[in-house]
Length: 635
Image (cartoon, rainbow, N blue to C red; front, side, top):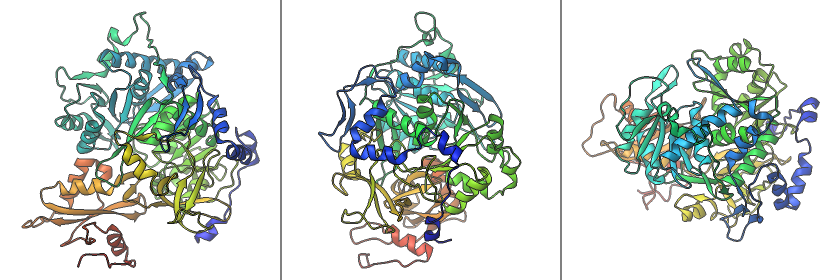
């Protein structure tokens, strides 16, 4: 089926879905936002609790350093926990969790708040205070969101590192954030294997001078090294009197935060070797994330919601931890792999826990799709009402399989486009929206998106261009931590006054957006952004490699896979297993997610006369496509 045919293919939501949705008047809301953006977002902010009101909804006096709800004070944790505990929701289930080994845990809002308060007291006893950075490196277990919430409760800034990253990635992020506390696990379970998280942290900390305390959650129970005076078991600390307030109860005062105070740093790959720390704040992020989750996934009090992402990525921050708790929802979290021990693990969990809303990535959909229809068809998936997709554009074939086999042709798919930087959904359907396989449909009400050509002019329908955002939004990044110049140059200089997303896209005649992919040197593997410079830096750090270039190649399951080209140092002769040695080396330095699919040794790399590696030439050559203008290449 051609793109044009797909663009004309419409899937209509049922009357029942539309009539029961929180929002079934998208056009009315979009028009309100167009007429008065500030008033629109002010109305949404009134849904949340504030210690003191704002003086101004949007401060645009110093663009692009926009501020939202200036003068107001709040704390996102107060809205996630305190206000629910003070209501009838105190005994409602907040979190259901299952480990890969079948272990199960549940937390009511009361119980979750108790754990968060106790751990917040532990952090305070270690000297953690408002504005301090705390690094979190864990598997998908309940202690991860507990740690995030405890940090935010005391006003500390958390920096979560995905549990699949390895030594060099951890070292660089701790060094940049200057964290003096790191929270980790002895290990984690994935695909029936133990991931040595504590050992990786120990190796990284050999190069980190700032870390004073390491808190270790016992998950696997295997023996790990514990350094006296630095390392502490989580369960020991939680059992000490310090974890309890002076009144003897598990209470901890929630720090009053300015709406613009930092909430978290999240590192994301860019076009240079150094990952950049995206900074989000309490007030605007809260309003954006809570509003989008409520409207897009139409969460109701009785729903059970499952986002399969890892909390170490922005999807986990916004739509596993903060978003569901802001709404007082019941969410489910699973520790392990979707195919362990068999390819029906996810579908068995949907059936067992009665999941109503299911949000996952195209990579996972394609991976499960290849096992056929029999595995999901063994299970009763009738509890599902809405499906979601995130991380990268979903190909129409996978979209239809997801819709027909998993959703039984009755569950609309909320295909969401957004970024670490945006914090919240930006282009997405609502439950009432007619759907086209592969399209994220339209901009969320209050989001002003467009597609520009090279000269900053809107393109005609059907033409490819640069996806841009023309107005500020509440959950937007405020800056790149310690690097405001890079924030301006990377996001706001390509088209002055307009946010440059770094993605290419097109719009069809109905105004539906079709995201095509990255236009910079970032590779999306299984929906995760990896900078080519970071991968190349890891390769060049190998003693045998002189130069390296990494490109993304289409992959049936992952969306893209990493292919690398290396030039060896003079006199080096590659051994029989050299390619595998390099792959394992990159996996050790950056983590398994960055492991190249293929590495090719070449005598030279295509470069411009100024020395810039021409990755587009390598990509075209690898795919057998025209290589374009080569006049700028070295002889």
